[in-house]
Image (cartoon, rainbow, N blue to C red; front, side):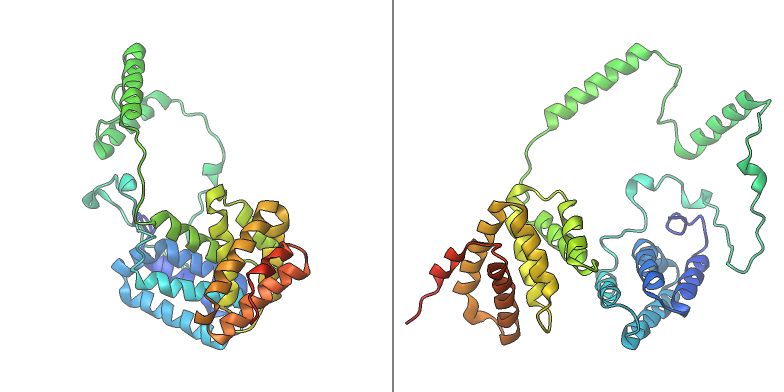
Length: 304
């Protein structure tokens, strides 16, 4: 965030990424991926060549194959984010763009600099001129941000009336908005996919997915994503079967939803590639073997 706000020079971020990727481990690469997602948009604007070198290093780490499969997926996801020019990770939110470019001061520091930590600032000292300094700060704040806050010592009743009027206006403007572009659905599917791929075990993935607060009407889409993620693997991974079992046994309705999904996949099974067909069949076989979904789903199969 310091780099996005141009408080710290971009060279500091590039140095941090270089150190993290010099001797890559699962933790250091994962941290580097998160850092690039947050500051990548700013680095692309300020130092495109430096960011290109970082991505080349990411590519090298990916080809070396010395890190965990989960972290490799994270790097691939980062390249996908780069293709969109970090559209989902803007450098600066409009509501945080408060200081004019002419008034900004960028601190050009690096990891090699000897910086005074000013440890004395961690100790509280009474300020004998507290009121005068507060007045100076108020004037400086007004100069930088404008006089939007109004007089704090004004009439409290007047401010209360203004707040009540604003609440009434907001209540009047409230209306139901239907998103026909399915943007929320796409974002939810992306979140589910990243959660599944970033988890080491099925229990961990199930715990994270349950914390996403998926709406009841979106539960079926969640279960569909579990099956589709398992379909994309080169070979069947028991991870997805166990994950599907956890959700099927969590609620009886989930088992019934898997029954409906079985009917849908069986109706379109002729469109699947051999590898995907094998994976989806083994996922549903695992659910049947563990009694996680009703065996009545076999009624959809017609033998002739």
